[in-house]
Length: 298
Image 1 (spheres, rainbow, N blue to C red):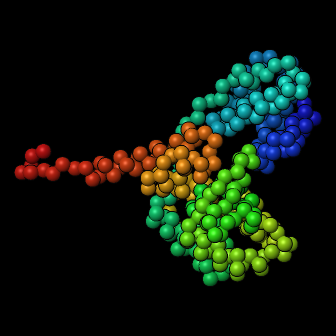
Image 2 (cartoon, rainbow, N blue to C red):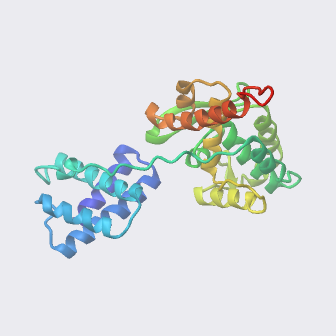
């Protein structure tokens, strides 16, 4: 089974062009599945429904999050689809397993004041400060995922139109835009900072010692930026994406436009932001719509 897992991961990388994060997650989940089958002496080519039930019991016993269990089931289902297509198995019993219903949490986003605090806290007198400010401004202006941001290339940027071509999930392209604040710091970075970092004639926008940034370095950078600020929100690069979407909806953008800008394949994924927007409307309504009282009467 281990060899088939390797073949499948190679298929994801070469044929499907899956993201590195997806491949790493699937590798971890499928190696766990392989280990479980070994311990139980299950034949992966001839699984029974009871075998899968035992696997699900094992996941439940580990007190894993619903999202983790859902991902593991999805990984197994996808792997067995591959085995079915390859003629290795005659059926995919994982297709009959429903993923656990996930608790839908409202996205964490920043208020305008919190956003201002973060931006104002970054000293742009140093090259390091300019890089930090640019990341923050770009995250908020474009709503990009961190994986998308670190993969922006110089050729993807149209400075005259203030837009960027993004290669998103599933290698789907979309166009995002940025405003004058991001433009200003981007211009400074391109003229004064990036030439000092580009030791290998790189095509990438963001460089860290001459090489493209990795996701974890950016996450650590954002963590360091907000470390000394007394913010109510837990801030990660994705927080700026949530903030981008929420602020757009709160200011009258239609949900289809936000869907396109975020690169969501399904409108339901974008729909969670309407809950945030509607909650804000409710707060404003309850705060401002009050009947005047006269002579103590209502």
